[in-house]
Image (cartoon, helix red, strand yellow):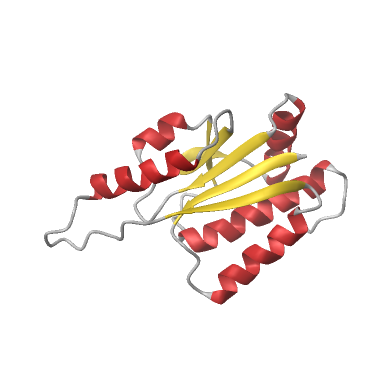
Length: 160
């Protein structure tokens, strides 16, 4: 069974986000072992005597990098990454599994994005849109697409 980890900056603050993640976690339990790792966020610099955006991204990036298991295939969610259809995303996951990859980690950055070191560590950069989404919503969207990918790969019905 494939191990999938979501490494994300920040916690889910509202119950409805936690409910959505729990629902997809339950659905995914038929297809993979899912782990969610939350890295503490630094907060957004307020323009006063706070730290620079680069330092914020670097600190958050260090936390994310520490969450990565050795040998895991890392997919960073990045606005400049490759865009895939749901079917192509499903094929990507299937190809990784068939090629012997047993662990995939998806990385979601904080409000400023991912540090260059995290992007360098990534084996693949994936973009869902040119738009920016809150990390809480992105976690739910990602889990839904992973669930959809497993259903596509198994020939099970899914909403088009």
